[in-house]
Image 1 (cartoon, helix red, strand yellow):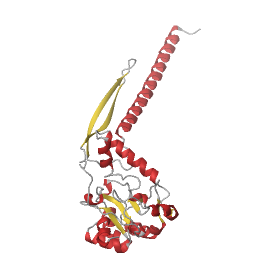
Image 2 (image 1 turned 45 degrees about the vertical axis):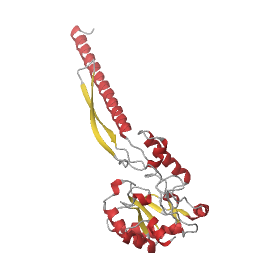
Image 3 (image 1 turned 180 degrees about the vertical axis):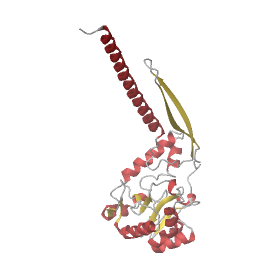
Image 4 (image 1 turned 60 degrees about the vertical axis):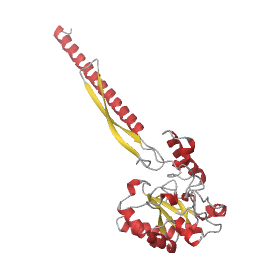
Amino acid sequence: MISKRERERRRRASRRHAAKVERHAILLILLAVTIAVICVSCALTRRDDGKSPVPSDGTTSSTTTTTTSITSTTSTTTTTVTTTTTTTATVRPTVPTSPVEGHYVQPAGAAWNLVLVNDWNNMPSDVLDTLEDNLVVYNAGVQNGKVDARIVDALDAMIRDCNAAGGGVWAQSCYRDYDTQEVLYEREVQSFINKGYSREEAEIVAAQCVKRPGQSEHNTGLVVDFNYCNESFTGTKGHRWLEAHCAEYGFILRFPEGKEDVTGVVFESWHYRYVGVEAATEIMRDGITLEEYCEKYGY
């Protein structure tokens, strides 16, 4: 027969075990809540614009902190979960009041390396007809990793020499087909509509960052966007080296700072276009654009 003392000892042991199990359960619940809050915070702050997590449309960021306390009614255990959420104050880019006039329209029959593609010059139909035949996979590790086969040797040499000098660059985005460009452009348009622009305004402003299908140099196969394709590349050793030496390999910084009215595109330190050594040397030496070079010679 079990004595009264033994029964009491067993009851106390049973209560201690139950309390221990309860504490473990509470800790697991609190851990799950913490993970859920972190996931929600990440989802709220994530900016997926197809290019970068760095704002490129005149936004400024501020940070707010939210503290959540969770207290168990069956235990004295209390936990505090702190999450950080980034909010954005948008500065609207200026919308042109009317279409820009006086831009160079390239005559038909331009050399393949000097084909001008922008807001005023669509991809020529004869180039489109033969484009697929010239494309090769350059970087299989990215979605848009194809380039025109005729620029591969020059691109290889430029990247190799840049990295030998400590540049740390790679080809991130090259050729894009019409459908891909259409998706990217429409997504950019929608982002501006969500900020309060009309459809017409949004299409104009979006084209300053992501070109319309058929008006993007990425449709040519002659373009390379380096690294993360955003402002974080500006001022890096890779950027400085490429800007100083790209002409030696036939490439140019396609959208230089201060030439937005000529190119129709904001400054992009990461975007390089192949035009051949002769043209590239003059363009980079004189600080002009492909538009100005082609207009100068009537190409």
